[in-house]
Amino acid sequence: MADDNPFRKGARPDEVFETPLFRMERSGRFIKIETHRTPEQQATLVKSVVDNRHRLVERATECRAELKALIHRFSSLDILAHQIAQDSCATLTNTGRWIPNCVPT
Image (cartoon, rainbow, N blue to C red; front, side, top):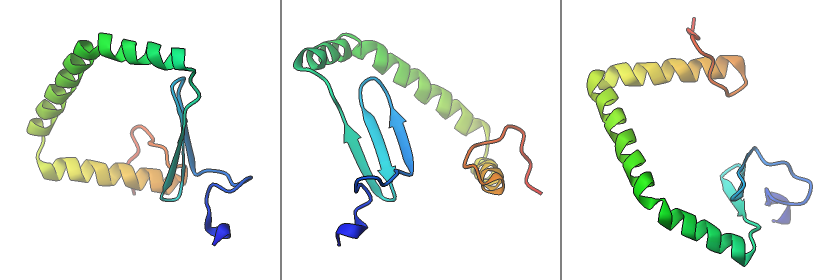
């Protein structure tokens, strides 16, 4: 059972996402999150989030409005077809990255 552990020493994660606030690793269906903040850094972070909450809410509202406008501009089949085409391009390149202007053949 210990051999099934995707986070065993020396095992490489499938994906890594790192910011100054935290590090997130994904190995298969497992996610590991690490933070290394001092109590002072944590207090500064919490204060910053509280102080900027109104701006974050405003930005989220703007993003929702943009998304809603896009969704109403296209039919659900158009959106689905576009996503399938993008997924096909990423699969064809074996990189997992989106390629601008890729048209599946």
